[in-house]
Length: 318
Image 1 (cartoon, rainbow, N blue to C red):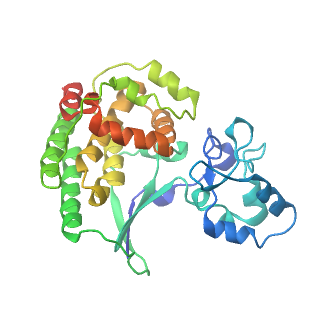
Image 2 (cartoon, rainbow, N blue to C red; image 1 turned 45 degrees about the vertical axis):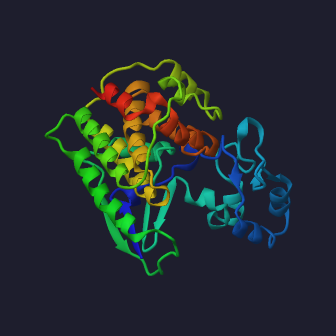
């Protein structure tokens, strides 16, 4: 199997209790089946503590019931994990072990990177001096079973390379690159599936008023947004690259590549309107990419909301 990662990926190190935010606060954490089986083998205080906070969410998933201020029940006063201390990080839930990494599996290729939702990862991506680049490693693992259409997958792989070339073309002003990227995606979409943009009247800035609020600071960002032109800087190039790497190839599953490209453009507009810094992208990602409810809403609005149509986005870039 091939593992594809950004060249900066292995430089990431969690700073634990020194982090300016906590990945152990604000989110419900699922207790995956493998971890639950391991917890059955435990005894003593840590087992009693784990058993006392296991609960079910509205979807029937087993979760850890949050403490006050939406803190994980194992997050201590030093912002360190008592479960990690007691039984080792390898036995914490899968979500905790993986964060802030995300994984996309495409048969014989696994792609992994870091999410903006982690302040340290966001800061790393903000300070890259060059466009985000990637490298391949070979893993001694068998390919994952899948039902991916090979022709569509390789079509999208080739198209993603072109998308990266468009984003990185320094001979063209960055706003014009994003317009070109949208036009490119429109043509790609025609070869995949019908895409009908809707007439939902949600105003542009209301798109970012998420129903599931995790950090009130994000609401302040949205309420004090300033419309201004897209800056021609390396961070914006890498915001767009982040979205293209994370989402573009997932169109092999739903045949919707245009929405993925819209997300890249909107990511740049988030930085432009709400704050050109890593913290802004961290807040947005924590609010949206790590809330299933908010993310499902965004995916729907990408197609149905008139303010997120290709025509309206191009106006904002002109």
